[in-house]
Structure formats: C-alpha cells, structure tokens
Length: 58
Image (cartoon, rainbow, N blue to C red):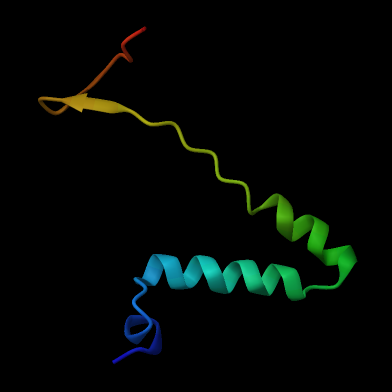
C-alpha cells in the first residue's frame, strides 16, 4: 500500500502537498515563477439534463 494512502490521503491531496513543498524548496529566483503556477483558476458550471445552465442571479 502506498504511504500516502496509509496517511489517509488521496492522490490529489498527496500531489498538491508534494508540489507545494517542492516550490518552497526552490531558490528565490526560481520560486517566484513557480508560485505563479500555484494559483488555480476555475469557473464552476451548473449542469441540468446534460446541458450547461446559466447561473441564477440572487
């Protein structure tokens, strides 16, 4: 069994922690560029009956 499974993590959690620690270990000149890639841009989309629906305005 994988050590990350034994620690109670799934692979996504394990890889996110590994990437974060790797970025922190870089030299300052390289760290700035690597930290730019850490930001996640995601746009949630609601789906109904197999089609994307417009977001409801509150």
